[in-house]
Structure formats: structure tokens, C-alpha cells
Length: 99
Image (cartoon, rainbow, N blue to C red; front, top):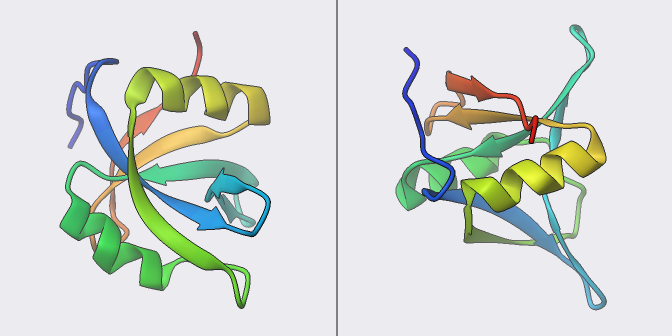
């Protein structure tokens, strides 16, 4: 299922925090060599799904919102796609960050 999400829409992302910086969490499908940022339409989905992500041990994470247009900039600058996913980590849309 593909859903048109406007650039002005807010999406939820997982952010890892250290003492000196915050960074949006990306994931990597090694089999297909695809790097992506998981984004969610609902906070509850993000809160349930982040527990299933590959995260560095000992890192504090927080669920935050970001406008899709700003997430596209982050993804583009770092070579990531954006996957809109649900709480079961099922991809419901793939977004290229092409600006």
C-alpha cells in the first residue's frame, strides 16, 4: 500500500542521544544493501517498533517528530531512503529523498 504523504506532514522518527549530539536513527538491509530511515505516521507505531530495530547498546533513544521535507534533506545528505513503516516494521511506503 502506498500513501501520498505531503512534504509539510509531520512524521515520527527515532533519535539516538548522546551527551554531545542527537542523531536520527537509520537502519540497513544488508542483503539488499539499502540504508533507510524508518519513519512513522503515528507515535504509538514508533514507540512499539523501535524496540525491534538494530540499535547500538547503551544509547538513549527518544521518539521525535520532524517534517517530512526536513527528513528528506537529512536522508539525502547521508545517502538514505525513507521508509514509512508501521509498528510491525512492515513497509507501507518508500520515499526517495530527491529534492
